[in-house]
Length: 106
Image (cartoon, rainbow, N blue to C red):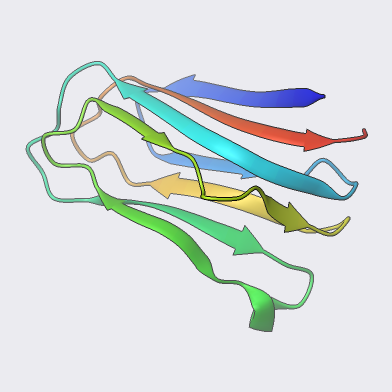
C-alpha cells in the first residue's frame, strides 16, 4: 500500500520521512510557486542509525525548476529506524509542496 508524507511552506525545506518500520521510497514530487533564479540544490539523502551509511540519493539544482518528479529505477528499501531527508535552503522563499511516496506497514 502506498503511503504519503507531505509538507508545504515558503522557508527552508527540511523534511524527514521515518515511519519507524521497514519501508521503500517509491518517488518524490516537488512543486514550486515560481522558478527560483538562485542556484541551490535540493538534496535527498538516506538517514541511517549509523551515520557512516548516510548517502546522497539525489542532488538536483533548482534554478529555473518549478516541478520535479524523481522516481528511482527501483524502489529504495530502508530498515526500521532509518529515514529519508529532503533538504533545500529556499533562499528565494518560493512556496513549495513536497510529497514523498513510500510503501511500508506502519
